[in-house]
Length: 176
Image: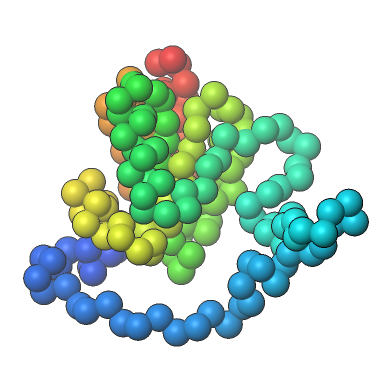
């Protein structure tokens, strides 16, 4: 069976030859503030959880240990904490446009519920400020999964290989 993955040629370029960032166009979606609604108990605005269905799930299958990393700075903080405090963790590198990544999303979500003591950090590779860090971690294809045990990377799965992913997650679970 052929591995399904997306190559990242833009990360292979040296920094000097990297294309200049293009100015961002305004988003077609309204800002998150548009999803805020007044609460009857207070005049301030509170977020509507239904406005963010991907971040807040209400399934009863159990608690998920999936954490969506929101910025390059928080990724740096989380990655450093996992290494310094010698914590078990899985880093799931993905992108919205990647077909194999979308195929693996329900699989890794199910595993995060199956192994709630192992946090899964979902990292969107298209976040601003992450390119150099991803190159340093040698992430050139997605989806990529890095498994950390006692603060060190113990294994890696590249591509949409469900069997390898399940085996690596089971191995990390047994090492605890």
